[in-house]
Amino acid sequence: MKAYEEMSLHAWPSLETSRYKGCIYRVSNGYTNRSNSANPLYSQQNDYADLVTYAEILYKKNNLPCVFKVLDHEDYKDLDALLAQKQYEKINASKVMTLASLSEIKSTHCIGDFENHFTKEWFSAYTKIHRIPEAEVDVAYQIHASIQNTIIASSIQSDDEIVACGFGAVENGYIGLFDIAVNEHMRRRGLGRALVEGILHKAKESGVKKAYLQVTDSNEIAKQLYGKIGFTPNYSYWYRRKSLTTLCAEN
Image (cartoon, rainbow, N blue to C red; front, side, top):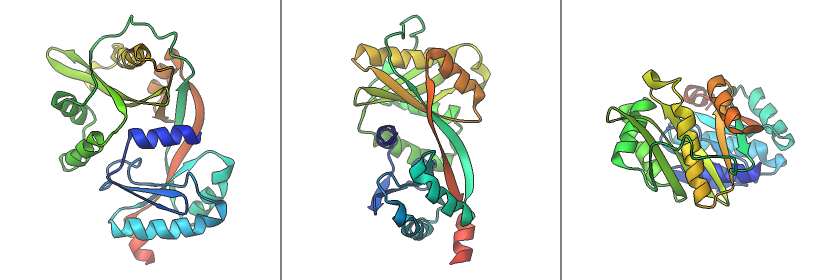
């Protein structure tokens, strides 16, 4: 579990990172919970109260809500209970799904374009398909540009327009899938599966053996797609969030 969390942190960096008592604090102007949350990967249970106090001061200083990532593991139960007691709302319940071997991934659906970097065209399509607000585009670009892993950026075009895009980040023999998305008017045509299998096949060609991804519990269509490819649920996580308004009112 911890290995997947470490890889996902590397694959989706933050603009600012700090540590306190084994907790990784990430700040990125509010763009995504992944890059603006506290991750107590190496913390001791008896430090949880201190971690929360530190986080509330840090995120209030950055004009952000205070967010903790909580894993569905025994070590996090006391933290989750503490955050619930302090009226942190539970949001974005998700699963990490894994694929134990890429050996069965074939090139049959391997269509699209593949790059080892993010092109201007790819990023422009990414912001459009994901409907990134204009005010957040620059932060999104900085995060993508900060990724140090080897990447496989993939896109599929229709009528000279990118209608599906995503990328994989390689580390320790794994490829993590991120930003998988298809234009709304092009869905249910097999492009999502083609995109995923294309990235996985390219990764297999380069010697990668396994894969992982993160998907929200509410996204049944995506979970079914990944299941058909061979991904199985590994563990769950969620975020606990306290709004900036509440933080200011309490202090």
